[in-house]
Picture 1 (cartoon, one colour):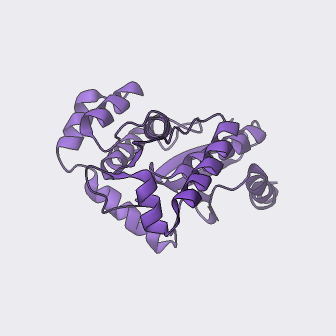
Picture 2: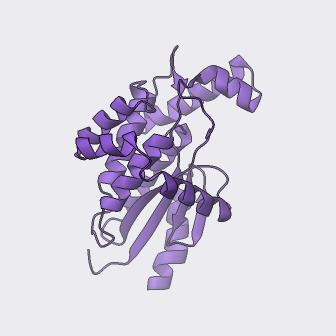
Length: 228
């Protein structure tokens, strides 16, 4: 592993974003493609699609129709399309009646904490931050849990091995809140206006849930060719 080039992968995303989990599942195929040729180091960064979302959340279908100006039929069609793509990638969207959009700020605080626990020198591509991110995606999209609720967030954090009491203390106060806001501001200054956004090597911005072939071509031409 130490003999191959290393590539940092910064992913700006929101737990509320269905395309963000789809984009990640596609990117996993990219990492598998380069196994043995390239070492990846993944870090997640905050973005709030709805920073003013009320604590009780909002019905997802009504939210989409209001925010994007689409009809109920268009909303269902879009959800069906995303669900089909996710299913092909091995992830279940259960967006039935009662599915709600949630406030994700506290989830981002826990993710920022999890990221701070990881060593910048770790050799594995992912760590506890990615485990927490994926657990939050599953909780929201598959299990329809309220990932804005503190008790739920603590349970999810504990499920991936994070300290339950520390998670409770973070959520009870303001810890990591300023860091989340600072990061959101930084990525906005870097022209990240939508998610997911993948930043390879700290300089190559690839927006959206791109197919693996897009990443593979860029990495072959811009990363491995330069390292040869």
